[in-house]
Image 1 (cartoon, one colour):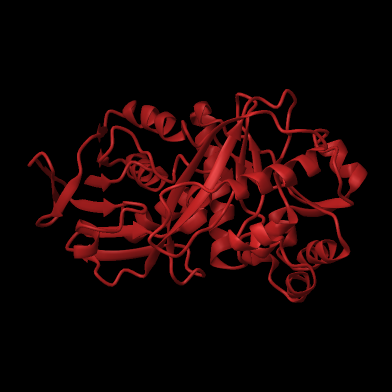
Image 2 (cartoon, helix red, strand yellow):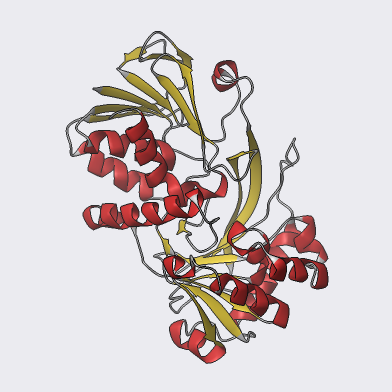
Length: 373
């Protein structure tokens, strides 16, 4: 079989990986010279701890297995089974962590509630203010800016993979064929469109009632920390944004301990991950109303810095870059992904939201199974 994959981000590349692994030939087409969207502009987190119980958690756990297996063959992914810590500072925050631990799926997530001393022993870089932390042993991370490059290099070694950058697919033709903006037709047996947050143009024509929206975020990165952040780190505001923590304790947190004004206005949480060069990636915000602003706001960055420094107990290194990104999310946020047949032998796969980096290996595996690869 010959599979045409449209889109060079992590979801598209994982579909290419699944097809090649199952013995097929793949042509992957990307409109930029390299993918430049949400697949690069993220934390690189394989985030199991906060996923909703049921299909979403199952996909995240399966994706975690797949990431580790692929990384054993592709070390340049930078996969690290680091786990995550969410420090808590108040009784209401601790109650949310305790409620999460009481659920049957807590063991699958690797959840444990640590004391402050245990937290610092696990991650000595956390020398700031907190009374304990929720630890998720199953969380991991990869290097988002280079993961697609590493995966494509491994795919090229198969002899059954071709990457065509700088070509925007404009039209899906007859069975298994697309036409790009160079006027060239690429023919295969099946087409999978993994176009990320690119939801206009051809995608709108193919799926005019697409139940997917775009979400914008802001992030930043520091110079090297000078010490190892042994886990990824979230603040307790992240409880408010991940479905795993929904319940009575979270309701009490939301009503009795509202977010600071800036954090609430920008729908913020702190996520903090160390890169291989020692720098820290930090964020993030959530903007849903379109049209999005074209600039980045400074107040959220100041809030992120303050929260991070409170947990670290030290000033952050200098900020070396800031950026904004946009990802696609199903309007029904309980859905893992939107998968739709849009033409004969052509499927659109989009809308994983902030779960794209985490769940892309499992999403691609599900597509491969469904399409009989």
